[in-house]
Length: 162
Image 1 (cartoon, rainbow, N blue to C red):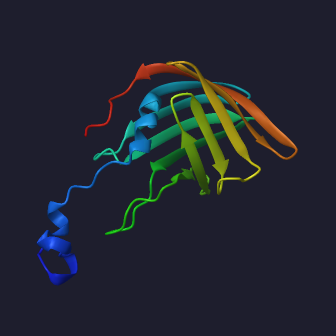
Image 2 (image 1 turned 30 degrees about the vertical axis):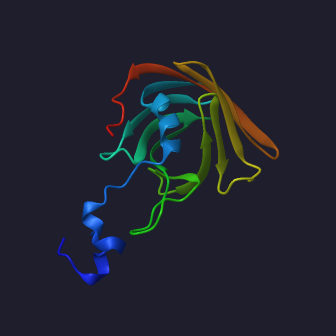
């Protein structure tokens, strides 16, 4: 990248020499890295791996529910526009093989995961708790419906590099 007035930061340091730092909230996603069997009211397999750089977790899924098979890719992390600070809310976009694009908001810690379909506070919510390091059990709930599922680790994955 050529040095210019536009990419010169305060104090004379250029944007290209400032190494971005990972949001500490990403650390809780480490537990998801690997391949998981999905069971319960939906079945299939999910794989979570870090995108190069470690700023986003990539989820790939092949699941079936009520006879409907869906393959998807989801990108999870803290949005950051060029030159801006990262957002303070973890979000994701999920893209299906049927052409759907779904947006989620997440809160993740060492005890479990809470996900809202759309913004935080949405009535469509996934809540799951860690049973142990290799089992995450929970349910999607929304007005008038929902379903239960359990993720069981079948393969460890590579952890993020700093």
